[in-house]
Amino acid sequence: MYENKKIFILGFARSGYEAAKVLIARGNQVLINDKKEESEQDSDKVKELRELGVNFVFGSHPPELLDESFDYLVKNPGVPLDHIYVKKAQELQIPIVNEVEIAFSLFPKGVKLIGITGTNGKTTTTTLTYEFLKEAGLPVYLTGNIGFPLCGFVNNLKSGDIVVMEVSCQQLVNLTTFRPDIALMTNLSPAHLDFLGDYDNYKRVKKKIFQNQKSSDIAILNMEDEDILNLTKDIKATVKYFSSNHEINGAYLKNDVIYYYDEQVVSCRDIMLKGVHNLENIMGAIMIAKEFAVSNDVILKVLQHFNGVAHRLEFVRDYQGKRFYNDSKATNLKSTQIALSAFTEPTILLLGGQERHQEFNDLKPYLQHVRAVICFGEVKDRAALFVKEQGIPVYVEDLIPDCVKLADELAVSGDVVVLSPGSGSWDHYKKFEDRGDEFKKYVNLLGDEMNEN
Image (cartoon, rainbow, N blue to C red):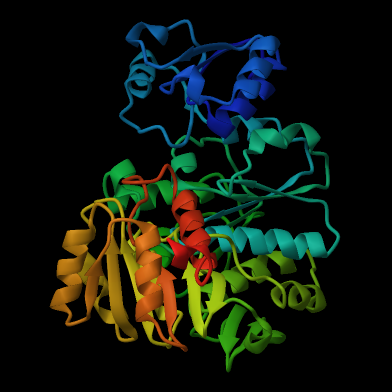
């Protein structure tokens, strides 16, 4: 299918790089176009691909560059759907795919694919699933939106291997044949509306993870999410559930113990992660692990040591009795709701970032333990006005280092300080990881260099 073709890759980055290597090795003619100048690219990767025969056009998107001579447009997931080349490919009826679709078409027979999606919790669920299977000694790969393109692994796969993949809505848009043996959806709430337009379209795209499944495949769903239940009424897969509120045939929570079909698996006191949302993530991962007969002992061993995923309600430091958490991945208000629900301690919230016309009123029911809010970033003034209206002390800063310093001054022993912005990072950072890393850097400097500045 992807052999001896002429292929246009839109967007370099990790996925474009890995896709190019796979495609050029199969006799394809490959052109990569990226809006960034060559000086901004990874020079070693550019040199490597040029030596393999890949052509590049950097720094612009010349309208004439994409024409009817191309057989495929491979789109980086982050490229907008209204991009000039995406529209032109549609007009020319050139198939638009991504590196996931390419890699999946090259899977050897006998590889088991686990696809995990949802609005929040998918990275934690994906990572935990991988850790459970790895600890059980199974041949497993961790891939997908978690930062490891599927094309980077496809040449190593063999029958019997297991691929655990986090799948984003940006990836799902351009998937047509993708079919997980097990697909899991953590939860749904409005997100990425700037990319997909509205919530109904977002849900439609998320549902694509189930579209090619058959009755022999498994769909694992969060029974507590009404949108998921409504969305998946007509899917063909065999459906199994997890629940944080009901005793069900599946994984469920009862009296601070997680059960799997009425078998006690693990007590919550043995789990490092905080919050009901993380217990739901854990139950989803347990549901998958049990499909591979992973023992309770293995599950317990992993959960006793698993501190969470970077930038997802990540514990950073206890400084003078004040506990600091990095939740920079909270780029929407639903994520901030989840973070605030995880704490009963007095909380100082760092809120703000990119202006996405967020409806801050959605936070009202979750502020009972919040005793101060520090607003920052592009949306700081609008966020601060909302907080002030709630009668909560509010402060405004421009930069994360200043937020950390002020939070330390405001907090007392027993307080929690959490960066959970409820906003994108692109007002000031290239990605949310950069924002979280800066937060962690200055938290770890408290009492040291920071006080000397």
